[in-house]
Every structure is written in C-alpha cells, then in structure tokens.
Length: 271
Image (tube, rainbow, N blue to C red; front, top):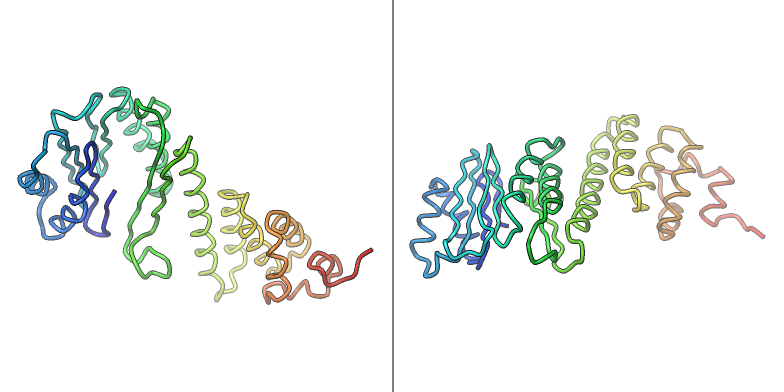
C-alpha cells in the first residue's frame, strides 16, 4: 500500500509493479484523476494483463483495473471512499464481506479498515491461506510529533494468523495515540479527561504495562490514590522496569509518603 495525506492511495497487486505506488501518487498530486493515473501507468507497462491496481483520490474517486491474466477469483467492489479488491481469493464473497463490514463499522478510519480485513478473512480470504497483512493511514502531521503524515503504518510479514496479529498491533498504536491525546489535557489540569482517555487505552491494550502506568499517574494527579496503586500493581506486574521509572516520576509525588507505594517501588526494606 502507498498513500499520501491530502492526495490519495494506491494498492498494487497480483504480479506487483511497485513503481506504481510512488508514480501513481505523484500523478494524483499533479491533478490527474484515478482513471487517468491508471491509464498513464499501464500505458508504459509491459505486462498489464498480470497487474491489479487500485487508485483512490482524496475526493473519494476510485478506479480499479484487473488484468485478464490475474488468477481467479479476481475482482473488486467499490463504494464511497473505498475499494476492496483481490486476486487468488476464494470467491467474490471476500470483497463483498469487506465492503459490508467497512460500511457498517464505526470508529476512526483505521478501525473500519481493520474490520474490513477481518471480515474478508472470515469469508475465506486468500485461497492459499494466510501469511502477511498491512494497514496504513495517513493524515496531515499525523505522524509522531507531527513531523510526517504516517498516522498508522503497521504490518506483519510472516505469520500463521497475520490478521489477528495486525489487530494486536493496531490496538497498541491506537492505545498509544489515546495516551498522547490524554497528555493534551495536562496543561489545563483536566484530570477527568486524562483519566477517561487512559482508561480507554487500557481497554484497547490491557497487556501493556505502560497504559496502566499512565492511568496510575493521572489517578495520582487527581488524588485518587487507592485506585492509582491498583493500577500501578497492574503496570508493574506486566513490566517491572516501570518500577525504576516510578521512583523518580513527579506525576506520582502525591504517593511519595504512602508506605504501600514505597514498598511497591522498593524504597522500604521488607523481610
């Protein structure tokens, strides 16, 4: 997958020509429609019959050619602002299921895309089985620290259950983004919103100690100390390295004289 914020996205499939990605985005950015992009790319390609290509622009216009020599089942289903396509699939039901799931799903774009992938796999997916999966979402200044447009860019290249693994990775990324959102309320000292967002991060990715730790920090800042200690126990159980972090974290200052907390971080001698 190739995508650029404010421009569009390109998927090059079947016997892939990877140059279609960057070239297609450049043509879209230059003002061509998706169909014009495809016409331009395939005109200079020496094997158009084995290519499958999907192009969508930022206005939701879609064009999808599938070469006659691509292997069945091959085809696509498109709708408003989306395209589902594939080759070597078990049947049309794969793209139909993906489209239905995408249209019915709620949440942000990444979650709707993930729902479509999961639905496609439940419908049979690739006739050869499972191996890899990827998910990319671009957004202006959506990358880390706002320094690029890679809002979500995850993949698993070799897995027995790549869709399940992609879901795990997506939940980790979404949880991290939720914590970043929680931090935007810090200057206003809006601990209620910080705690609400941190609870959402824990719900998305409960296996990661960092999410429990951040929840504990926000609970401590809000002087909800008993709840904070429970969250810290969950954090330390999942990642004992966080104990070292807790020893010098000013977010936890309201607990510094709490004997249970001091015992948890190793500042009290125990038998």
